[in-house]
Image 1 (cartoon, rainbow, N blue to C red):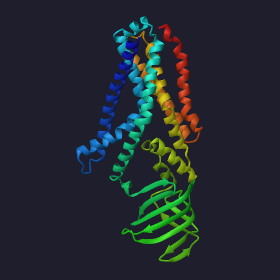
Image 2: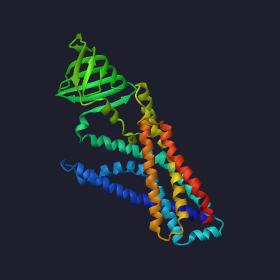
Image 3: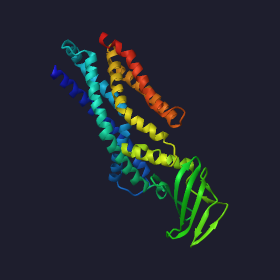
Image 4: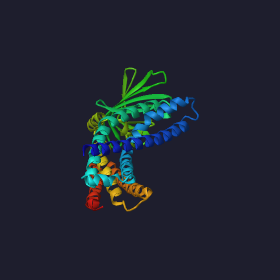
Length: 357
C-alpha cells in the first residue's frame, strides 16, 4: 500500500512540475515580447530584457496557480487512465476517493509552500522589477509613498519640484499638509503649510495657506498650484499589491488606517492570500471529480476541455466578486470567500458519484 501511495504522490508532483515548467515558459515568452516592445526605442541589451522578464514572471505565475493545479490534476488522472493503473489501485483497496484525498493533501502542502515561500519571493522580485522599470518611464520622476509619517509625494511641474507631506488623506483632500517648493537646482523657493488641500483635480486648491519665503511668512485665503497628482491617481499608485509581502501588506494597512485611507484593497488581498491554499485544494478536488465523472469519455481532449471550461467560469466568478469587494459593493470578506463556497457546493454535489464509477 505504501508503495502505491508513494507512486501516486511522485506521479502527481511530476505532473505539477511539468505543468509549472510549461506555464512558466509561456509566461516568460509573453513577458519577454512585452519588454522588447517597451524598450524598442531605448538602447538596452537583450540580456537586460531577459533579466526583467525573469523578475516579473514569478508574480504572474502566482496568479494562475489555480489553473496550474487544475491542469496538473487532469494530467495526473490522464496518466492513470491511459495505463489503466486506476483499476489496479482500486483492486488493491485504494478507491477513487482515497486517491483524491492523497493528492489533495499533497496540494495542501504545495499550497502552504507557495503562500509562505513562493509568494514572498515573487513579491520581492516584483518590487525590484518595478523599481528598475520606473527608471525608464516618465513616471520615474514622480513618487508617492505612505509610511508611518503620512503620505509623501514628490512631484515635478513647470520646472519646479514639490515635496509634499500630509498627515492624513480624506476623500479628495489632504489634511495637515506641508509643501516644500524647489527649483531645478534644489534651492528652496518657498514652504507652504495648510490644514486642508483639495486634490480632486490636478489643480490643487490650498485653503488658508501659510507661506514661508526666506524667513518671511504670509497668510492667504487660497492659492492654486498645478500637480501631476489627483486623488484618483494617488489611489491607483498603491494598487499593485502583488509587489508586497505578507508582512508589508499588514504594515501598509496600519499606515493606511493612520491616514484614514481606505484599506479595502489591502483587506481583499490579505484574505485572498489566507484563502489561497484552500483555493488550490478545492481546484485539485474539483478537477479530480470532473476527470473521474468523465471516464466515459475516451478522449482526453474532452476531459481537459470540460475542466478548463469549468475553471474559466470559476476564474471569472472569482474576479467578479473581487471587483465587487474592492469597489465596496459587498463586504471584502464575502467577496473573497463566497466564490470558494460556490466551489465547495459544486464539489459536494459531484463527489457523491465518485465511487459509483
